[in-house]
Image 1 (cartoon, rainbow, N blue to C red):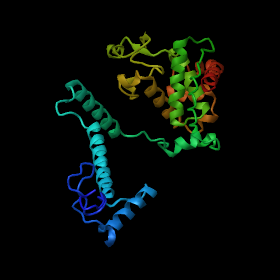
Image 2: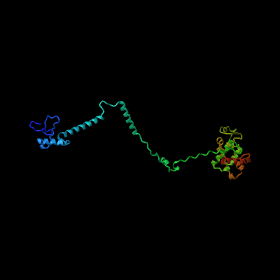
Image 3: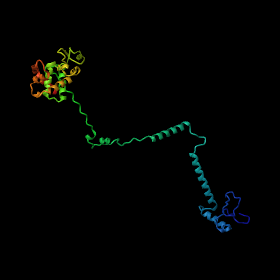
Image 4: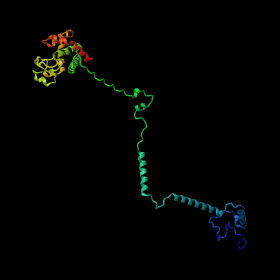
Amino acid sequence: MRDDGTLDDQYGTGGSADRSDDTPSTVQSTASPDASTPRGSLRTRFDALMNPLAARPGRTKMAVATGAVCCLGLVGGFSQIGARPAGDTPSPAASAEVAQRADIDAASRGLARESTAPATPSASLSASPSATPSATAKPKPKAKPAPRRIVPVAGLDQTQMNNAKKIVQAGREMGVPRRGLVIAVATAMQESTLLNYASGVLPESQSYPHQAIGWDHDSVGLFQQRPSSGWGTVEELMDPEYATKAFLSALEEIPGWQDLPLTVAAQAVQVSAFPDAYAQHEWRANAVVKEILG
């Protein structure tokens, strides 16, 4: 209360400047024009007592300023929580571990992904249940039949049978019919007993493969052909294949040889001193040729 009897209004513009419970505001009051009068001051205080929640001009701005300061303090607190102190640096081991994990992650991302698609269309066909076996399975190669073993017949041994086989093979290469093969085998039975003879008179003949040595002039080989008679060289006549083809070539030059008796046909080629000797080997020659031809 002033000396002039007027009540002090702490909410008015004319309030005392030395009051410690109210901070002076530099903002002009928004109170009504009659608030500077004693009557207005009394009304204002009465309204404040009746409505304590009503806003007061001076303290409203103080509350806004205080709230802003609090919000700035919370933001600063959160920022300091996530920040690392200036002196707190990671250890070298931790840094190395982080770098190693980063390299592993980068390497794994650079690896090529394995494709799940089939490599070839045939792979998908083989996996499909509707694929036919003929489209996917390769036929197995047929096993080659084992060669038939030719056994000796007609009282011959294996060496004699092998020589008879060479005669038959040479005749088939020439296309000679079976009758000519029988005549050739029967002639060789009579001349050399189906052994490849060298000659004691011709030492050269003994330098070639042979199975016996004879002394009938210069006769050599399975058919006892003489080089001096123009049948061929010693080397050629010691070859069973050449000797056989030489005999069959001469046989085919005889007119009607297939209809002649065996001994007549053989004698026409050989001109032997014993023309009738060939007939005795005909049945044996037939048995041998039959075994070889199967």
